[in-house]
Image: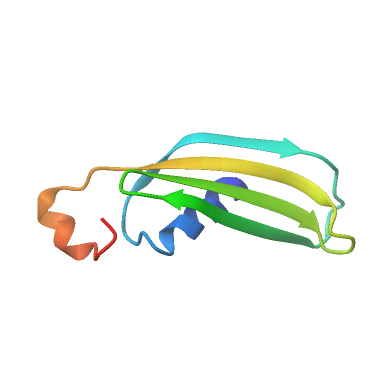
Length: 92
């Protein structure tokens, strides 16, 4: 769930108020973590165009920077009715 939430928010920084839907989401887990262990989460928007956005995310253990998990998430921007286009700003 964190992959979906964090990467979607990263895209929403520049594509505000644009509805989106996941087209592909995958996670690879490399190491376990303990309850209460601090993680550093880094989301990157690789590309965001008119119809799609492509993202990656990494989860690293704070204490030793070990890679815990890595995810990829692709999103499609959904069509918006013409009468609502004026509310979107310059990114659509």
